Length: 267
Ligand SMILES: [Zn+2]
Image 1 (cartoon, rainbow, N blue to C red):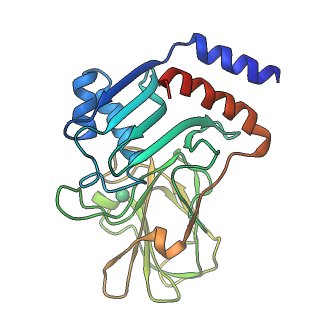
Image 2 (cartoon, protein in one colour):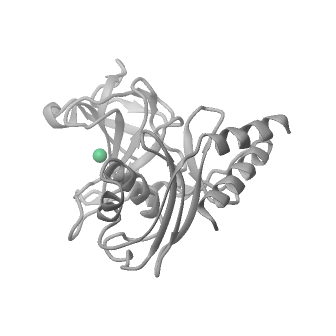
């Protein structure tokens, strides 16, 4: 109880910045106009969350309402989006692993997690496979994670090749799953010494560690799956997904965060 009280008083006295606006054009353009200094960085954080609720190229409408609270960084603390097609209220909560993530009011994580993910500890999924008009082409899932985070093989596989096209891929591994699909792990810091072409690996084998080698904007794992004809397969669909929830013992603190944010955002 004491910790919940302390938490709420810290939040109330730290005075997060609040923006409440009507969307015109893209999320990022709207936020840059409202805050030239913080808008671009906030726009990226907001778009990443809203991207789980709809197609931002088609589902953002003029007149949608966006309210958000953030602290210097800028770091988004909470957002409330009320649009014609997309509706989302999300609140940041820092878990026992020290990583802040965004949850719905009921404590369910906004972004999905993969069953048998190649990483157990990561900050966020920052990219999913996409192509098409107005979108950057991307063929895998990017997991933002610290350099040195262990990467494990999700399914049994045979190693196909290691460290090809290093200028782009950095240190990398390509494996073949039993159904013939290929899985690629790119931008590694290290490749485990036993990972050699032709080698058969059991699920759970340690492949190496997360890095930022090759063409990479920061530490992350690019995980890509291709079918036997070389077409991109969405790892979220191949693995199946679920939504992690806040542990029951942390829900009291989270509810107090939610209540504070709702007061600040006036909803
Ligand atoms: Zn990527």
